[in-house]
Image 1 (spheres, rainbow, N blue to C red):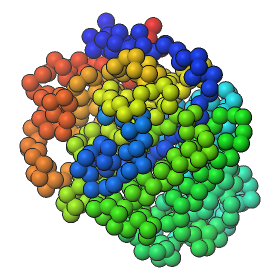
Image 2: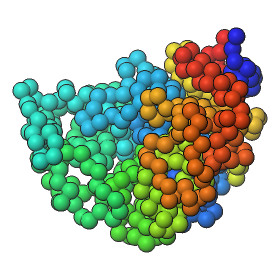
Image 3: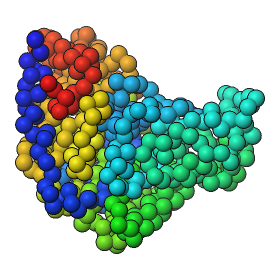
Image 4: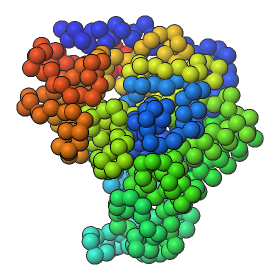
Length: 511
């Protein structure tokens, strides 16, 4: 017998997921722009936290023009798994948990269907600009007989070990994108620009942060590896933004719709706002870096308007996970809690690790200025867009993606009632309705900071084997109710086990 919770989950959404997009919207084939921030907190944007110390006028305007979801989630509390889930409509933990390391292989199997692949099949031009962090086949371009060198800290490929004239296989172009431009990961080698599947200029030295301008907060966190002479990480946002603006204007000259996945390196470390943004926030360099990110979003949105495409473009803004652990010091120094009103940060299973800003603007379809408390996930973007373009997803793809189209049109109040939270193997959380279960002793992974807990009124740990919270009554996850509701703990553990073992959670796959 299926658990009661799972049965209600299926019944609650079964009537909604097959509602078709209007014929007019489908005929228009709207462009799609995804703006994806890195390590941005729910409490950083002023549209989500009125007392934020960081001005974000462009994203606030986007929220005013669309739907601001207050219960939006990434799949993971770290970078690559969330990106994988967004682009596949599948929970990352069905395949992997950790990050794709420097010179790491692709996170995608050849048979795994991606969002750009389904759009490409329907006539869209697809592009990714900025951070990739989903791997390439670097082994294919390493020269035979090459050995790694020691840069004084660890062994890495030297610039002479790689044939930079070759195309690098199994990157964005192998998984649905027609075009890519970026540096793959700002703090991972190689430190150079990559266009499509080749480097623009061949690295000739080993990375050395002593060659860079002074960092403004935290550490560089750069991994060892090849770099081009004169590389300047401060140019990342200006250069990629310029490329994004150009791409948007160029697409206005064609007859085909476009999909642009624009992924920022910010405000992830290294925290390096350009000088013109210094002091623009009251939250230190991190806050200034958020201001620069907001400014870049504004430039891309302005390009849509200037090119006459704003009224026919769906814009989605979100972030891959919550803020880094530097947020504790920021709260102490500036009284700005980036994850407000939540507990936890990047890597944690608590809400602060994965409960992120989620804004959708869909001109002519979604109402403007709407604030929705419906539970939504970045995993749902795949099924929603598939519905929009009339693409029938196979049963073995996008296994966890819920179609949000009825919700975006205002026809239903909710589509999803359950979501699984995870960053590392063996530590899961599950949300169902108003309740969330941490199926572990606690939800921390980035460390426990007693001073922060005391400042924000957290009680001592009550040493239960699991933690249960009612988010309607306790959004900050202060009061563990596991001992008071053991039957609910068991039911949610059973639901977690069933969804993990059955291999799907998408309503369309419920038989």
